[in-house]
Image (cartoon, rainbow, N blue to C red):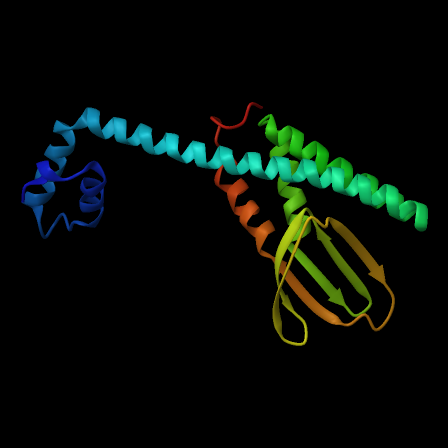
Length: 201
């Protein structure tokens, strides 16, 4: 087996899959090839890390700007709706969602760790919508792609329509929804939770 023709990626895959006990000679050849190409292996590792950080940083920037734009959307919606139906509850909702999205987005853009925590909380709050018959809750940012279970299973989507709804009463129906967009951003945030190369503090 001529491992000198293998790429670094192929060498790593071979090392991960080889049975050391069944093929001890091949295993030793693989280790020797890694040792002989130590500088190339290190360069490959650095290149892969750089690709990862470029991808993660790009997605974090997208999430940050989405939250900032959502903040502006809630401000606009708040100003227009409060003239029609002013209540202190509605005022608190619009102020709270605007401040949360604006602060989370800005701090995330600056890579400050508090921005991570606020963004994580913000996405968790958007993850589920539910209707328990007497309470209805739904919160979405700039857009959502939601799997809804209510009299069957459906896929619902919306863009450029931030909203927060919390209703109580009777005969509101039963159902639950899972926002796939929020789920994706929760996963993204979780992949870089403890990465000191991303966060400033």
